[in-house]
Image (cartoon, rainbow, N blue to C red; front, side):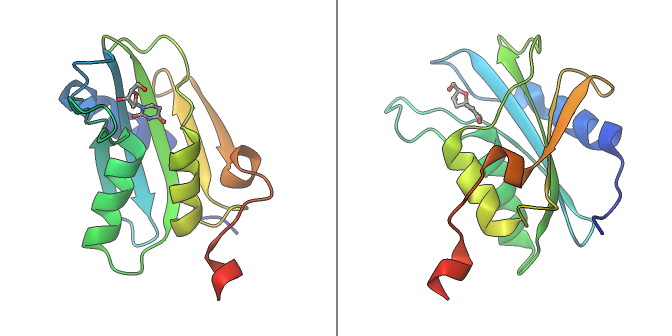
Length: 141
Ligand code: THU
């Protein structure tokens, strides 16, 4: 059974760091908060680059922070918020690359992905729903 957790608190943690997003080129600010199975939460924002291609998404910033500080930890859930000029008017879906990174550190059937406008206005799905028929580490085992 999947771990229970406070969705509103996780979304709020993402909203709390949205102003840290560094997006001078797109003007599209994103923030994420990832809950690990040891109870730790890490936040992240998108960090753009003048080269464009060196940009990293908010989700990967949060996940890489979490993995680098917690050896072997797995993802329980991630909350994502974002919008132009830091205004969250719609649900911000994770890009394909970030979905694949989630696949590396989360279980497709139990990991929860939450896209939110506010702490109480959100959509939630499993990673499997976002990334069906996915390729993962077990293929290489
Ligand atoms: N972005 C994210 O941070 N996460 C996503 O999943 C979608 C896109 C960022 C990357 C870039 O800085 C900006 O949004 C516009 O693509």
